[in-house]
Amino acid sequence: MQLLKITSVPLEYEIHTEAARLEMKQAQNPSHVMTKNPSGWTMHARNIQVRMDTTELRASLNMRNSMDFARYYGSQGRQAAYQAVGEAVQFGNQMQQIQDGVSIGQIIRQRLLQQPETYTTFLPSAGTDISWQPAQLDKQYNPGSLEFDWQIMQNQMNFIPGKFQFEITQYPDVRVEYLGKPTYVPPSASPDYVEPA
Image 1 (cartoon, rainbow, N blue to C red):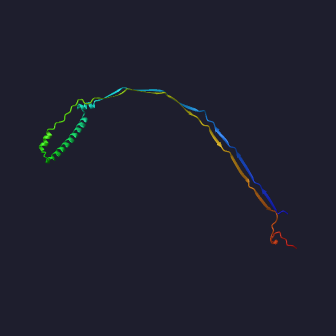
Image 2: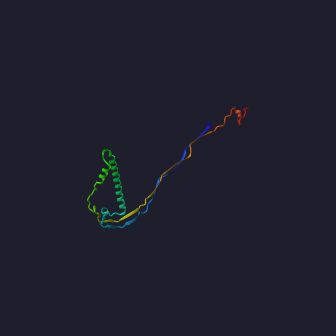
Image 3: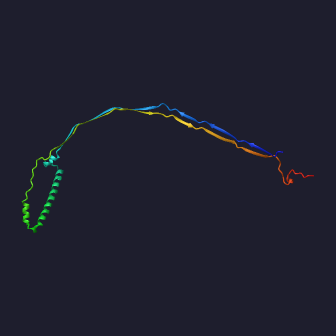
């Protein structure tokens, strides 16, 4: 008599696949914007320029403006002051030599007998400063241009990857079923126990 019933349940699964695909949207025809820059001619002319500077000429003739007069006589006064200080120092040095037999009268007589310095000059001592700048003619030609701005549309592509789906609907199983009746110890514990006669 068979007491055990063994049932084997196999594995059950489902496979779903979806192929990859590429979706493409074709662009429209290209368009362009045209910009035209016209040609042009530009010409600039400048006449000859002559400059005559008589500042040094007028200064040599003592024909200065007020600012040049102030600057000139200021320089002359500073030079005269330096010269007077030098003469005073020289006079003081000569007076220190009195012990060598030099008298003050001799010093004064020597200063009175000094001859003034003379020199010869020609007026005007400076000429006119003449400078010039030649005439100039500037020419510029712009040949013009024609520009195209193309608007090229790109194709739109969308790639959809493939799909693979694996689904288990039934896991494997082993079922064991006991077909016999339970064994009671002692046998009198069984509800179907009948005492022997």
